[in-house]
Length: 115
Length: 116
Image (cartoon, rainbow over all chains, first blue to last red; front, side):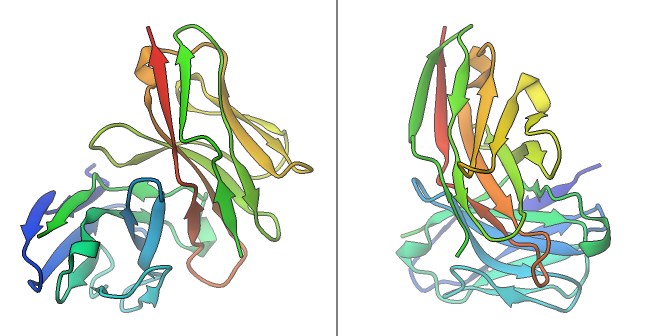
């Protein structure tokens, strides 16, 4: 059981380039989330989804877009990368409202450096 | 607005001694409270949670946490620290009654260093 898988694990971009991070979960979870982790700031929510075809903004959505075309996948896109987006990105998932025990399940992270 | 505070950037403790990692929160309603642990170059792993009932909850790896409603605190504890407990610990709250998404708010994290 793979759980939550993120690809790629590492990426270096130049300012202005675009890229997509892929998150895949095999637990049939309704809810999925993208967080970024920066030193001393904990995890901050970028975007989230409560089901296939739905997305919503989190705490720090600017500069990012997301899509949830399939229930098991949640994509995070950077259209024009900036050095301020250098961070470690984590995807997480959890069951939906009716069967939620509260805890999140995390991927291993994707380390992005923007030069 | 919901918030979580972890007042210590780092906690240092000798192996075999008890440890405490502090967390206070500011939320409305009755949120779920969590502790997660992050080892180097890994994702966060769930340790334990408080939903309701007994104020002392037990979790993985011998950790426990004490919920104190009057002090709005949820401190993580372990009676005897191990070197392998050295990691980054996050306190978190999740509003399980709000409108869709059940967003989780994390503290800034506390690095635990256990010296042999």
